[in-house]
Length: 117
Image 1 (cartoon, rainbow, N blue to C red):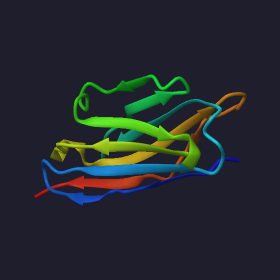
Image 2: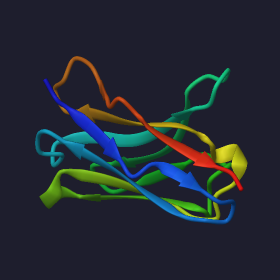
Image 3: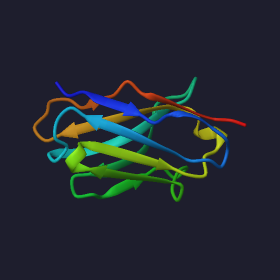
C-alpha cells in the first residue's frame, strides 16, 4: 500500500503563490506518472498537471504558464508551484500516482487551496 500526503495548501490572495507538496511512502523512481487534480464544490475532479517517469509534463489549459509540476526523486516528493493564483483556482487539490506493475493508482486525501481577497 502506498501513502500519498499532500501539504502546502491554504488561503492566498488573488495574484499570490503557493507550493503544494505530495510526499510518497515509497520511492517514486518507478512511477509511470504522478499528477495533481483538483475538485471545486459542485464540480467534477479535473486534471491540473502530470509528470511522467521521463519528466514529461502536461497541464490543463487553465493553468498553463502559471503552474509548474516537478519532482524530487531523492525525497519521493512531487511539487506543484502555483503562481498568479485566481479565485477560480479555489479547490481541494489531490495528488495521484501510478506505479509500474501496480493494479491500481493511488490518491492522497487532498489539501484545500482558497484564493480570495
